[in-house]
Image (cartoon, rainbow, N blue to C red; front, side, top):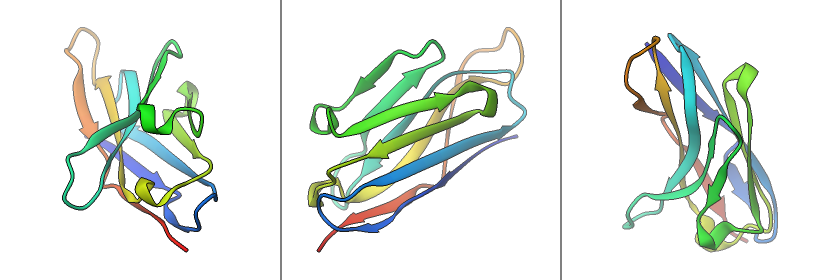
Length: 121
């Protein structure tokens, strides 16, 4: 079994910062990519940022230059540093991992439960 547990969400004023963390645990052979997605009320879930095991990153255009994704491979942990937050960043942020549970098996996606980020004055 694999678990992804997020932390770090909360309420912040516009212009403020938050740091999200996500730890993957359980029966894991290797993790190819980890990322953050978000879903605001009434909207489709969207990719925020993603990082692969070799450090390649991609970001949504709306968060470039404000958010930074990083990863600690030894700890199976991914972080999202969010600066200069805006009200439109308000959403539930969910962690995703594309991983193999044993050698030679295909990649599968796993999701965390999500953490609420609210940007409001």
